[in-house]
Image (cartoon, rainbow, N blue to C red):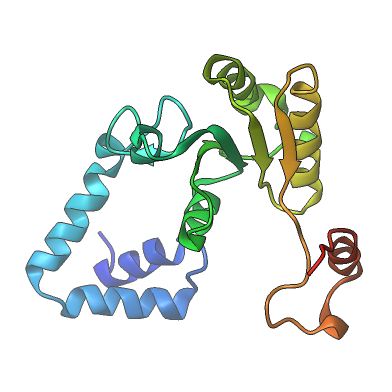
Length: 196
């Protein structure tokens, strides 16, 4: 059966961004918490795959067939923001500046890893643009080789439509020092400059 604490530490350590020290702290926190908390945590983990599904429109996670964002009539249905993963959507939502809807790819084009256009819901994106009369697609994929390849593929796939395809700006982060900024980021910041 093994050591139950060591087993819990091992499971926590498999979470992204959690090392062995943090996993150990989490395990002892759960052990020291009230029994009801541990039971509630276990129940939430046990049933997560049954209670959460992908939205039929945008692939976001939610409890219903259509997620809360797609179901919200106050959202701008003519503007879609394409993101690689749900955490990217969450980050954009936290900014409070985007009031449109989303399309989540759950990955990026990566031919060396065997991820091509057929492995991502890119056809569904094109179909959605046509069916919903989308006016603008904002491509908010990461500024990586895979993210750029995905952005270019989306632009090409929608080139024959009337939809406007834009790319998020990239540049120096707020509070960032220019001397520590990489060349690509600094170059894009200069290219994407705007009038004050």
